[in-house]
Length: 600
Image: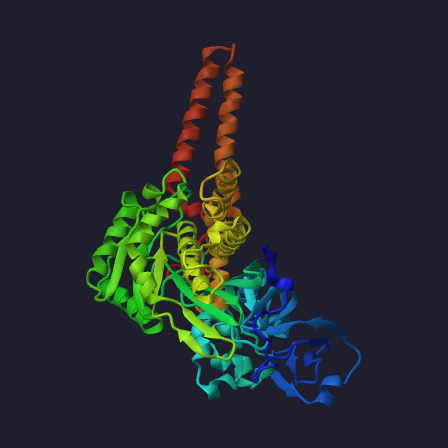
């Protein structure tokens, strides 16, 4: 019987509070001139000046002094960012229990807010005040970021295999010194806390997805955890961060780890996804599917080499699975990718036209792909360890999957490969017979599929702003009518967000991640004017809808009237068609664009 594992006891014994752990319960005291944040469980405390945002450690006596303040509970401090008028401190105001990872509780951020330390705003120029207002609006967007997870006493940035092989001395260091910086969402916000040596307050936020479930095999509990970590090196939204940058970091790069626990054993299977590592773009222009543009650059071969050198160094042997179409713009991009891959030694490239081979929603046709790479996947293996820390097997390589967005087709494919690997892991652990599969149990199979559907939805919300498409293929192995309706709604949502909102959301990500740095004395990024993001949709809609309305009205007036009314109707219809053509030809002018960094 399958159950939700969030409320179940861990199968491997929970560890005591680890060295370098963060304070769990915090009290926020808001005074007129300062914020005081102190640990409720007897730890340290610090103050933040409301005038300039300076950080200062406090003794227990200093932290308890004063009573004229507002007191509230917070669950962590995610960092600080400096803008024109001062500093803004990001705190976690509510959380949700997400489950446990390697025996440590994991929490999902429910809500965050920035504490303002910006009294210097009164000294800014008029332009600087306008700039600061825009930056503050970006902070409001950042407060609503999806899919942030953290632990007080466990470094969530390291997968089980990497964490198990850490040098003994590193385990006793603060969490931020153990972490893989690629997967720390708030990396840029932590610098001042690190400089102030406030280690016990430094929370590492990982953006991605965390799902856990439990079921029984042979009358013993099995726990499955699905944990994805989004890389911060090319953080962005679906249309404004495509392909790779010159360093070889790709958009929507995600490391996905599937863990299984059974009878004192724990296994881990890693896959990665990431945008096609070429220099390419797809600029929104009001069309449903904007043209893909491959950027010709002399560095392209080196970009691809850097990307795969980094993958090989981190994960070992790499099999590339390209799920794009062989026709149209996707085909041109796929062909360019295949041509570059011919120059990369020791990396196997496999093209699998998902839409063609799995047309009609036939999910089982992914077996064709699996047959091509089965030997490589079994050779790469998985990681297996027991509760005493004894390592039995190690994963020696990974499968890197991509489509265009690295969302829908990629999630379906990764779920298929993950199920195949899980069967092998459970067979080795003794939970299944040598020919057994979780697919033979309807309840267990449904639980597994549900995890991967929710996992795909969460990653899609973070990158595209909508739920994933093709969820039915994971859940049922075929497309259903309700699934088609859900996909249609998600596709419309993506269209709206990508065209009319994601430019601003990209600005928020660039500001939080440090790709754009605010400095006084530098010319404003907004002095060139242009449409404000909030006006894009009303302007485009008003022009088109107004034209159609005028045409309809004049036609209705022309019925039964003289030729002059028909001529007026024709003129209105012509003007409407002309306006529609004008809007379509200049679609990019009506779409939301990033204003801080643009395309990088």
